[in-house]
Image (tube, rainbow, N blue to C red; front, side, top):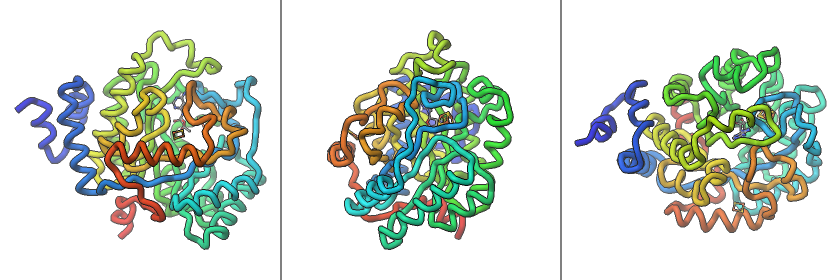
Length: 360
Ligand code: 5AD
Ligand code: SF4
Ligand code: FES
């Protein structure tokens, strides 16, 4: 039995175990992937759920050093999808039995933004006879705002911690009132308090990030007892401050492989959460999402943003699906998920089983 095999038999993995597992080479990692795939089969089954993604607006008040739509990037044409277009996209999701949509946006804190999101959530519930599940990913907000959106019918919220290492957080964000690590943590707590299924995630292969940091990220997610996770490789963007550190990055292959191990290990740690095969995974490997599904992911997000806006929501370079219509992304993902050996959970919400258990 190899050291990796022994670790995989352990009931409770600690930080050192995770570091060893994250350092596994390609041959050793096969055992990790086999284990995580079995756990997925056992706890989730071979169903992948669709979340139709609507990228509502690229207007953002923040200046995260890694992100292509940061406020400081003047080379982006700012847009806001109209309410009608959002509802049309949601209707497409409903008609195609996607089960759920994710409304994502650059971060804005204003009464107008709060109201727009609330109205769109309400509208999506109405047009779907209350049947569409709604996830929001609209950044840090006050408890009142989170409550309002929840009352209108959003039941899940995604807010990535980006990294659980406070020091690294400030190498990725300006150290100011708008980018406060404690505030980010507090928002995650508020989301739980309000009653959302809470999702978080991190970027993998960031400049200055160590394997220890990634082990801590996995432990953070277990300790915080998250319901959902979306994580993927960091991908450099030329119009961002972090680009100057591209020289110290791992190769794209290494970043992808490390991301795949992160997905598999999180599935081993948190057997019944919802775990996304992210678009960033596909950016670095043509079969990235399929591979993620095989090793434990059970969520994909077909893009529903009207095609005319897509080029302006480039958080990172080479983002896929910028020209494909919603129909094309649907067809494409159908084939890909079949190839990965899964069925698609059409017409189901596919809620986090972990959340159901946590709130029993
Ligand atoms: N590479 C990978 N992911 C990124 N994100 C933002 N910029 C990048 C990048 N350059 C991710 C962040 C954010 C999510 C919406 O997109 O994790 O939370
Ligand atoms: Fe804005 Fe999110 Fe990009 Fe940060 S990562 S600049 S909050 S869109
Ligand atoms: Fe959009 Fe494949 S999912 S083109």
